[in-house]
Amino acid sequence: MSEAQYLSKSGPLARRRRTRRTLCFRMFFMLGAGVALLAAGLWAVVWWEERPLRVASNLLEEDRAAEAIRELEQFLKYHPDHGPATALKARVLVQLGRPAEACRLFDRVGAASEEEMRACSNANLMLERWLQAIPLLEYLHSQNPDNADLLHELSSCRAKLGRYDAAIDAAQKFAALPDCQARGYTLIGLLESERGNHRKACEAWHHVLEVNPEAADLQVAADEFKMEYGAALLKAGDPAAALEQLRASVKIRPSARSLALLGKASYQEGKVNEAEDAWLKAVALDENDQESRQGLAELAMKKSEYRTGLDWLQPLAESSDLSSSTAFLLQRLYTLTGDQESGRRWQSRATEIRKREELENTVDQILIDSPSSMWGQVLESYRLAKQSNWEQAALVLNPIVGTESHPFIEKLAAAIHAQGTLPDLNLLPIELFH
Image (cartoon, rainbow, N blue to C red; front, top):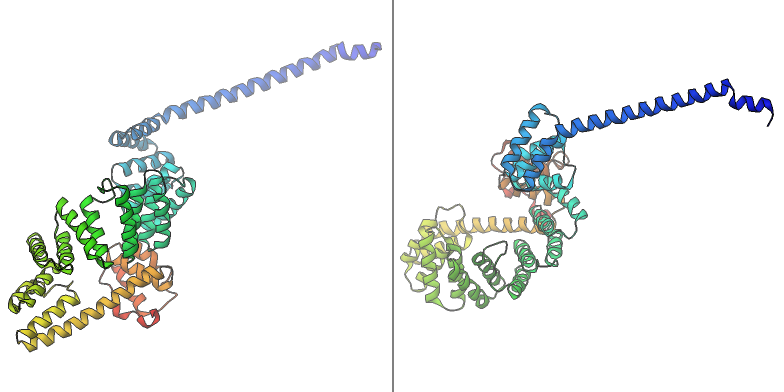
C-alpha cells in the first residue's frame, strides 16, 4: 500500500468521515427508537382507553349482557363514533332481546366480523326481516358449511321467502349432521307440509319417529308434532294411521285442533261415537271451532235432527273465515227444514266462498311453483303484507313497481305504502296462471 493510500484511510479527513457516519447512525437509531417509543406509547394509550371494550366483550361471552351494556354506554359517551364499540353494543342488544335497536346500530356501522354478522342476522330474524337476514346467513353458511344452527336458520329463512326447494336442500344437509337427524327430518316434514306435499311430509315424520319414538327435544312439542303428523296423514288419505298419532297427541295434551282432527279421523274410520265425543270436547275448549261444529251438525243431519244441526252451525254463520263446506252444509240443512229462501241464500254464499278458496289455492300454488317469477314476487309481497310485515312487503314489491302497470300491483303498492286495506285477489289476472 502506498503512503498516499494509507493516509487517505487513516488521516484526519478519514477520521472525520467515520465520525460523521457514526453520528448519523446514532441519530437515525435514536430517531427510530423515538418513533417506536411514541408508537408504543400511543398503542398503550389506545389499549388502556379501549379496556372497557375488552371488559364488555368478556361479559358478553359470560352471558352478562346487562353489565356489558353499562360498560359500553359509558365508553360511547366519550367516543360516540367508535365503530367497533358500536358494533359490540349491537351484539349485546341482540342478547338482551332488543333487536330493533341492534339493527339500527348495525345499519349505521355495518357488521364486519363473523360474530357481528351472526348477531346481525339473528336480530333481523327476530324482526322477521327475511330479506336482510338471508345474505348474511348465506355468507356465514359458506364459511361454516357444517354449522347446524346456521343450516336450520337458513332453511327457515329461505322458506319464509317462498324458496322451498332451497329450504329443503338446507334442511337435508342439516339432517345429515351428527345428532341432527330427528330435528332435520322434523324440519323437512314441516316444509313439505307447508307446500302441500303431505305424503312427503309423512315420510319425513315417519323417519323422525324411527330415530326418536317419543318425539322429544324437537323444534315443536311432542303433542304438536303428533298432531301435525296426524293432520298430514289425514290429508294423505290414511285415516287409520292418523288416528294413532292423534290419539297420542290428545293423550299428551288435548287441544281444540287435535280433538277436531281426532274426530275427523275417527269418523272416517267409522268410529262415530268416538268422533262425536272428540268434537264435543273440542267445542268445550273452543266454542268457535268450525271443524268440530261442522262434524256435529253432519251427525245431527244423519239423524234427521235438522234444527239441531243448524244450532251447531249458527254461531259460525257470520264468521269471515267460514269455509265453503260449512256454507254448503247450512244450505242443505235450511233446505231440509223447508226454509227454501235461506237455502238459496246460503247456496249463493257457498258458491262465493268456494270461488274465493279456489283463488287462494291458485295463489298458494303460484307461490310454491313459481316463487321467482314476477307474479310470484307480487304474491309474496301480498302474503307479507297480509301478515302486517309491511317493510318486507315493500322491499319485495319495489323492484316491480314502475315496470308493470297492472291495477293489482298499483293497488298493492298503494296499500303497502299506506299500511291499509289490501286489494281484492279478484283483481289478479288469473287467466295468466293457468
